[in-house]
Image (cartoon, rainbow, N blue to C red; front, side, top):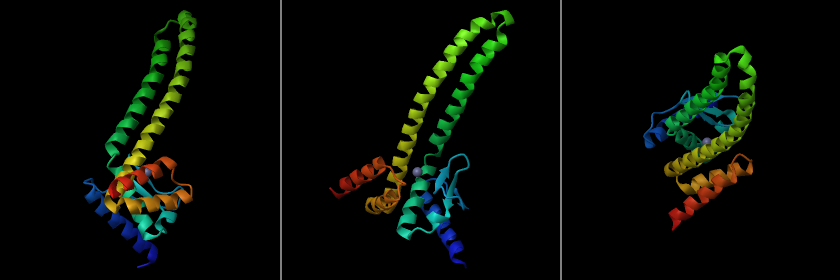
Length: 187
Ligand SMILES: [Zn+2]
């Protein structure tokens, strides 16, 4: 078997093992040639692994795969977040549409003032929404790291995060959380 195919099979079996360990259905795995790193797609319950990840040393690869399977355990929450976003955007857009549709032509000037107010509040909402989204995704990352640590051990998880941080893929909060986790275990 060619080496890349063997490595892909290795990843698929890691995903199956880790999913069983985390009591979640094994997500599908898709091997891609894009340079954006590994990711989990909640909508399709699918992990994408790029060539760069596939070429990682085995200890690192295992942590990355365990982290992505960790995201699969968050699928329900991720989909709910997505559904809420879609619902809220739909509601925000449909309110002014209904106001305009139900107002007689001569009254349009009267809705243009609240309309402008609405547009301004929409801009304000977007800012808050983005901050909320960033907070949620940071929490998802920390939780996936915790699950990777529960499978592979916090010491190897920390070593992997440190190696990835050197390449600029990991933010400081995740490193900090993993160091704290390791310190707690070692106590
Ligand atoms: Zn992640």
